[in-house]
Length: 356
Image (cartoon, rainbow, N blue to C red; front, side, top):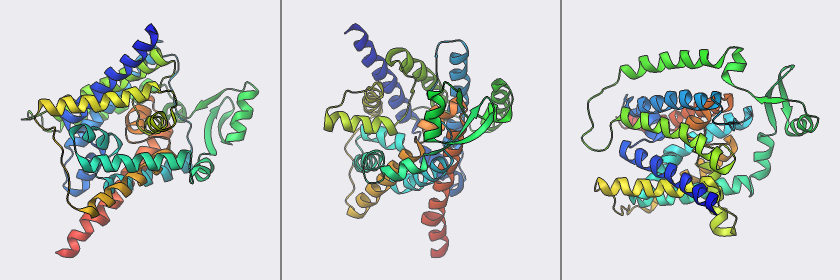
């Protein structure tokens, strides 16, 4: 009982922190990616880059110090990561926010985000366990692993056979792909990030947190979440939304036991709510347009399908997964960006040019 209390508390505290900083910093990957090509604004993207480099350094330090025994690096599934990532990027635009963005806006009281979350839950569930489950299994069947004999393309059956025979398999990372020490990769990424971040506007925000404050805090929380999830639940999962969303649904609907990540997700709603209340921004906001509700619901479904296929969302891959330097997460977030840009171009930029 004593351990279960800490199991719940650790998850809720992490979630409170994530929800608070996302709301205070208005951090949403949809905005971060969209603003780059739509209004040539890199502010939110700089917050993301800062969070990422802090998370990379913190996570790998915790691993090397032995404070996390085993990070849950995802295997590189090329078809799933490319196709799922691209689909998710499309869904972000129609849904009006990324997976983390729609969840924290639920805590603010934004009704359209509630609708998007419902779509997201539906998309994740039908891909994991419904009509798209076979397609999902097919796309995730082909994986690239690092073995003692080099990099190999394997099927899920091959992977199971290797494990059964006691043959070591290692998820493909940027550093073992390049054949260098991981701290060399981290150093190069760190220098590039510092140069990029230093070009930002460091004036203080009038409300909430500045981009650099929110980005720095978020990066620390992501690293701490890796440790907290491993220490208190026995499995390092960190901050993510795809799996936890499905687990939350199964807990509420089927009565499954709640996981550490379910309580993290509930804590996030609380953190966003309290932050918004403090800024006097928490109130029920609705839209009278039925067409908008349909659009964001479909966008949520598309996001859910994409994130389930890719094995993670903008945070699950873009921060938590990429903090381990996993190739699967790098490829997924790149194609989320490309899917977002493609949709922004056809939905906003091209339509504006045609009106002119």
